Length: 262
Image 1 (spheres, helix red, strand yellow):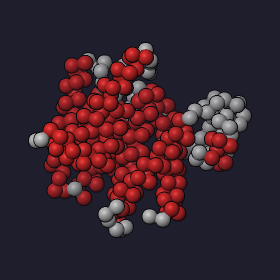
Image 2 (image 1 turned 120 degrees about the horizontal axis):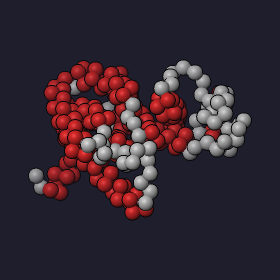
Image 3 (image 1 turned 30 degrees about the vertical axis):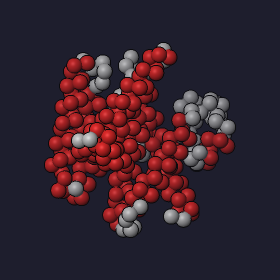
Image 4 (image 1 turned 135 degrees about the vertical axis):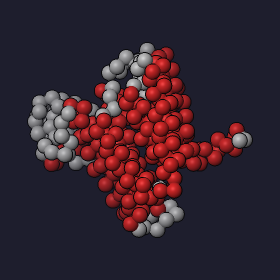
């Protein structure tokens, strides 16, 4: 793909990342994410258009609010860049062996919706210790119609995976009495099952538990187990596992089968 198109797709991803930052900041506060201008969290000054240009504004403003001089979080450019990269990778992944047509763009919207939602969940759970139901509902609105229309032969497999993942996490919630993970994780696992189906859902959960255990051990050793709730949030690991499996779930499963010889 020509460099020019890559830059365009990446720039679109940056703008999507900027909107994800709005969702991360407003949704936990029960504010509208589609109306009202963005503002400084400290002095409440409404931001002008030139203060909202992805990445560029952050560095032009020298990482400070123009009025109160409060330092701005690196979360903003980080989310924009990560989203830009993932949107570009999604486009390259989808056109690697397909021609551009209406279905390709529908599939791209599907991928972007999932990636954006899980990035928001990743950060919100770390910052606030919650998984907003509105994001779960949005995912269902995107995933269910897509599954019924474009994955009809596999819809039964998707729902079996979703129900199995939900029950598995519900048992974990009951066993840990909500201390290890919460009901939000179980709802998220249900959506993951519909998105990924078998065997990608197995890969995503394995990756989530593996990375979760590794990070938890590191944080405990360093004595930095400080989050909104006393436990380490698990949704970020589920988000990471889902995005990885969305792209490479089948390949990882085949590789595991070869290694384990089953």
